Length: 126
Image (cartoon, rainbow, N blue to C red; front, side, top):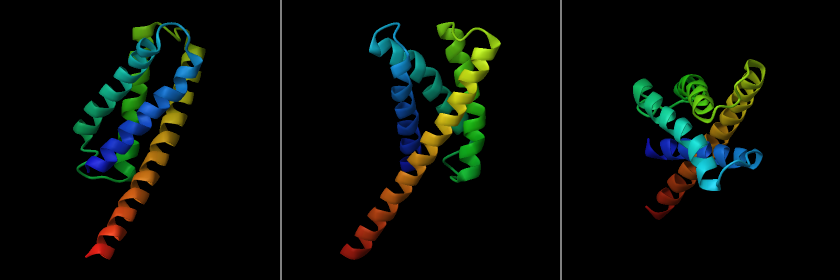
């Protein structure tokens, strides 16, 4: 399901772009890459390993999310060096998990609406 994979990756990129507003150290490209590379890389690896797009659905999305996002946030924190204290890191993890899930859910709903709209358009033209 290329549409779902694209929707998920776009949702995660949107999450990174939204989060960039709270980062001011580095260029925009540096900030984007240090946040996007761990998240997108981990997402793709976990999605392939779990077969997220071979068996698309809420359960595979949630399994991928609950494995990939925490790993990505740990990798990102180790790479960047912050947050380095446990309490700020747990807050960062909670916010990251919450908002990635929100963005992924919105992306999936939009992908479904687009797919349904394309299906309706195809049926009308047939």
